[in-house]
Image (cartoon, rainbow, N blue to C red; front, side, top):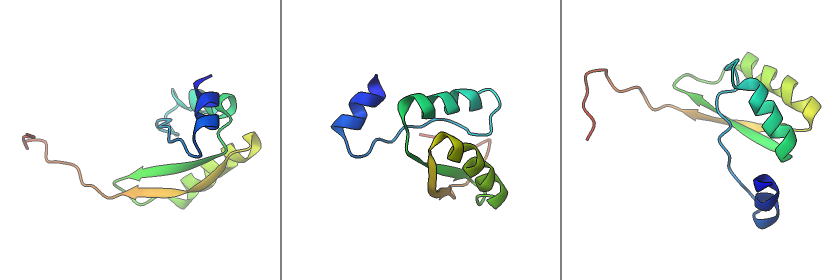
Length: 87
């Protein structure tokens, strides 16, 4: 229901669906994409450059449910050292 409200109220809604390749969350991601009528997605690759094989796999999963991959955001932020303090 929330997705329907967002769809009619806004031209663009950004929804974090979690990690695609996590076996526990992947079925939930597919259900959300189908049930919410998500037309397209953008992936986020953390730390490492996006692997073309992973992107091809995502496209193979998304196309049959009517969703397209628009691109990838490559997050180059490095990990903080384990002993660093945050303020």
